[in-house]
Length: 247
Length: 390
Image 1 (cartoon, rainbow over the protein chains, first blue to last red):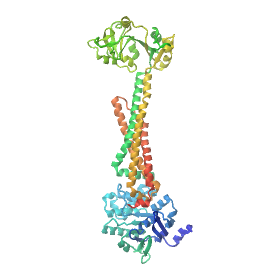
Image 2 (cartoon, rainbow over the protein chains, first blue to last red):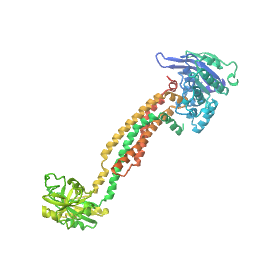
Image 3 (spheres, rainbow over the protein chains, first blue to last red):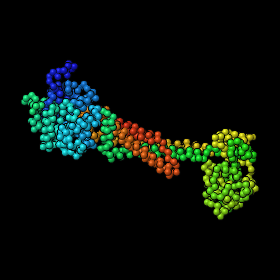
Image 4 (spheres, each protein chain N blue to C red):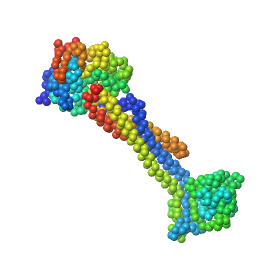
């Protein structure tokens, strides 16, 4: 069965991430079941909001989808590969190549300038420093910060920092970008601008999942998956196929 | 990941917190500095001794009357100096004989206060044999040797409070006044001469009844053949009982000194090592704190694709770099201390290059070892836990 899975997923469309009956339990007494039999798939080119109140399992979803953690049972297929079967090195490689992360707290390294923070997105892929910086400059241009590459994160505004973090997430052209509350630390206007940037990147072909508790964001994005108590309670699909790509 | 990137990432933490890095490296610097200084100072001292040895030469030999089988002081035959002078490679020989008298500044001083100065009857040749220079005045010669005159060794002159021969100072020697006609410069290979008052054999014999038989004969031989000369001296000096003759080479004592004082050096090295270990523990401590503080950076790097080994390497390299920084500073510190101490002592500076290299390499190794535990902790962090601020 397992051997057919990659083929099967190709047959069923262009899935970037697919979860099959995923359960994630954290040890304790009684054990905490953060994900309770979740199945879903995210296709190439989609822009998806994943919403739910705190404790609904959003963070666990992020960890599992982002190959930061393995499921207790079930399958998590990233680009058709089941991450439960991978060792630390292979799992790290999946994170490095297939997934770009954007965090609420930016997670920029203060000691180095914006350009090098972006170039760090390619650090663990065996690419030389010169090429990393070249590609980082392109990514910074893409997020509209081409002129701020020489500044340290401390010298940038919140919105600029998050855009640097987004540039770092896309610099390696990952299969999917996972954004965890990307507007959570920003004021409304700046948050809107960051969201608009994500939409623009999606227009250019990036697959993006925005994890948020903000209903306004979830309403704005073409697809919205709602979580409650570790299970999917709603999945609003785009009205017409290819909304995320074309418009 | 490339090696250059491993180093770049590993030194990021140090560049980010230069103050903390400096303080941490200081511990290592003190340890390495102490060890390099100890090695450097002992090497400089040894180099100085060996240079002295080169300068003084190894051709000086000393023949002394030993003891008879019954434990009594034996005497060298009066013919001994002449016999020795007839040995081919011997360039000069001069004898001395102990005189049963004390020397004092004046007759008012109590007889017991000799100041450790011995009175010797000396042949005029002694000066050439010892290659001794006069600080003041002249040495004994055939002309003055039969008069109550005395030549003082450098220490003897100092103890008697006589610094020049101006005004013809006199000392109370035995039971009469002797005029000081000369003061010797210090003689490094013959410290017992430094502490002596030398008078002529004729005067010694007539005033104190001293025998003509030598108690010591100083011999200057060709350096390259000194060993051969040494082996025949006992038989030449006292053919009847060569086993009652002691032959020594004063330069051997210097050579021994050059290889000695290792005990103190080892002790100091040990103390340096203790300081170094304490410094290493300091590095480990700071690295543990650093790992705790940088959880989110570790999480980020894991999210960017870093494996556990990448994280481990980053922190080991950071600890090693931190310690190397201390190592370089310590080596510089040790070299400066050595140079200052050597300059103070008037030695030439000799810091072995191997000590410098070992200092830096040792610090690097120590840092890497100190970094192992914190690095293992960093690598163990689950990426999912590290990435979200708790």
